[in-house]
Length: 135
Image 1: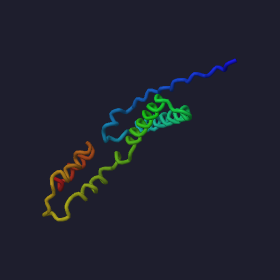
Image 2: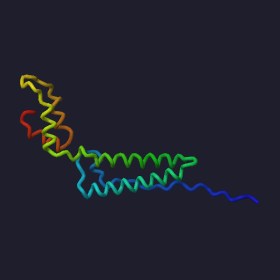
Image 3: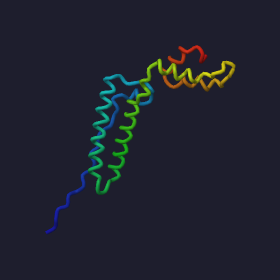
Image 4: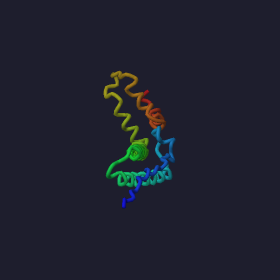
């Protein structure tokens, strides 16, 4: 008698949706509540990625490969939101911006050299505007 072979089950698709889409394309720092939910979302995605890797250990299907890529992209994008550079205090930014100023007051630098600091994000612009020497 023949054996019944188990048909391959399609990969389980988990809908990956950011709880903080407004932070994905900005340099704004997350609040503590947002940071907590981002960490939880990353942990869930990593768990799903681990399951995905174990399911496709023998021969990964194209569905698993694309799902794996989606998990990796989600995880990396959300880890960037938690990056410490988003939480630099204004005092530290002021010190950094002062290093952009030429040592010799007679030196004239191209405008783009120091105005770029005010174009990174809203917080950096606010700090840059408090330094009259830049302007």
